[in-house]
Image 1 (cartoon, rainbow, N blue to C red):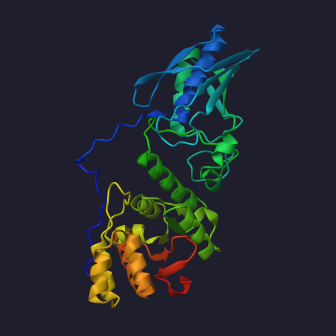
Image 2: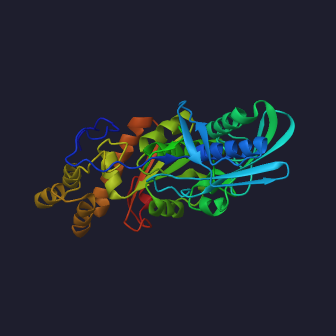
Image 3: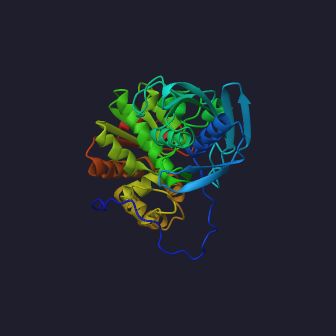
Length: 376
């Protein structure tokens, strides 16, 4: 087998034959919550419902939002801003970020979560256990927006998201210990379509939460199917250990080292494993290609015929190569070699002990692994 490749997380391609249509950016829940809080503050102080409000992003840029609804009920004012996530497939797109603001004793902004905003129940998120899942940057944005209206007077701000508990079922909140609703998120205030930054951040956060629970092993899975297979394979591990890493293996490994994790398991299908075996730690299809030549070399090492080696090297996809191995009776042997190579890459990258398993395309059956007893 040839030497390990240089490890890399490649840049986006510099050129493209066709320039795709630009995708529309949107706004984070944190930005929308700050706009709703400012609108409610205006209504509370003036008695007049604003149609528009302007708030500051962390960058200092100021943006304007339409106010969807307002209500003044005695000593409390409520305002709603509807989230527009742009062209990002965000489960909170269309959510009604709602702020209720009322005067209170003392000074400063006292922030709390209402209906549809999750409660933090585990350490590792950088938020107090028992408090609302409103991240630090949104907290600062909400506080600034309210203070622009009320100054230093004391106010209580409650952020709520009707339907947020149902939205949260489509997120990893429960596993991270955020129960009862969504998190109020955002670091820049802007949602960038199909944001690699947001996914990467969620992966790193999942590693942090596992470490904060005292877990020393994380299991990196490439998607939902592989995660189910991983949980069936390693039932003694806590649910928090299993992380749907997507394309961000490198980011997860770096965070694992930083947080004191001592063992890594990677479980995936042949395509992602082939990219990792080639040293590509950021495996999104736009940033890397499957090296079927590598699979051809592994076929030769597994004892495949010259004809099979050539066929695998010329395969259309990694799945095609997998099928060729299977028909030739070499799936276990070549697959084990692939897993061993991936393990070597992971260890070289992070220095932690690692094991690797390859599952079939249902995600339920382990067909090759660095640990022989894992193979079905």
